[in-house]
Length: 328
Ligand SMILES: [Zn+2]
Image 1 (cartoon, rainbow, N blue to C red):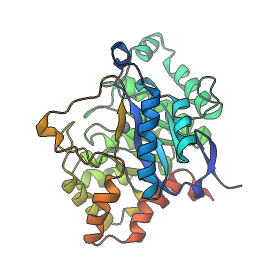
Image 2 (image 1 turned 135 degrees about the vertical axis):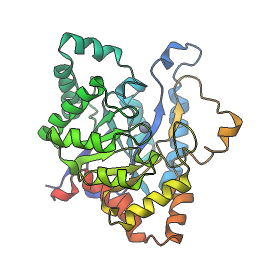
Image 3 (image 1 turned 120 degrees about the vertical axis):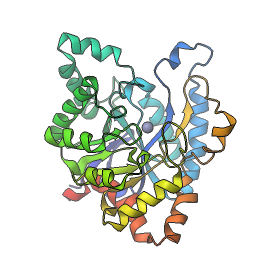
Image 4 (image 1 turned 180 degrees about the vertical axis):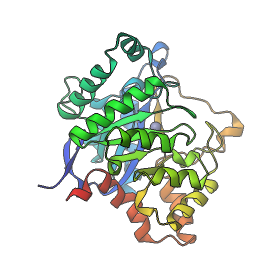
């Protein structure tokens, strides 16, 4: 029996995942978007925009997208399922809550005060991973975790601890959000010390950090590291792509190609009113879209000596491995 992963259309064999983007959002809203009644969720528009994006992705050979949208930021497994049905992409959906600073912490903070939060989070993860989300029958394929800048709060720590326990029991893959590439080593250490398998962990958004030694400190835990915000330049603490490329080349040169992932963290459709970027920012994010790495980053990496085989390792082999390909 070959290893499989849950997609929104059911289990897919890990060797069939192919070229994979490990961290994107077909749609996403900061908690509170639903409070502005002027901008209700337009599912037909999301479907239209997703089909348009999917056809561009397929032209670059992408077969699988991990949608990293947490439960409290507008996740909708049935809409993801419709996108998968219409486009033929494998879409892997997440279970989890966003980090305290930008998520909706009130609900589980209340339960934390009552002493019942961890038990409830455990039930939620397990149900969503093994039986389905609500009554949809659609199973999540990854746990999504997050922490804020330069600290992991007590609220965030609960989710990490429970996720490690669930990882141990189910073998599920964990992907994370780091804020501005901080707390990578600490996230890895916390999960591994709680018993999670480092080979199933992707520490995300580490490309927000240009300190090579900090990356290596994270990688030394045996986890994957995400260069998964290509195209986000000069805001939310993000460096320029040219700086990211320098760090990525350094890590590949140091022998870490088998622990690196690439993606964009693109928000394809914003729930609520679409954000209007000020002019000076607009020019910095024109390449923030789901095919940017294929069009603009990989050609530069190749010019700088990275081989087709190494690109394949990062975009095909590593995603297969993190979903259990190394157990075959
Ligand atoms: Zn994200």
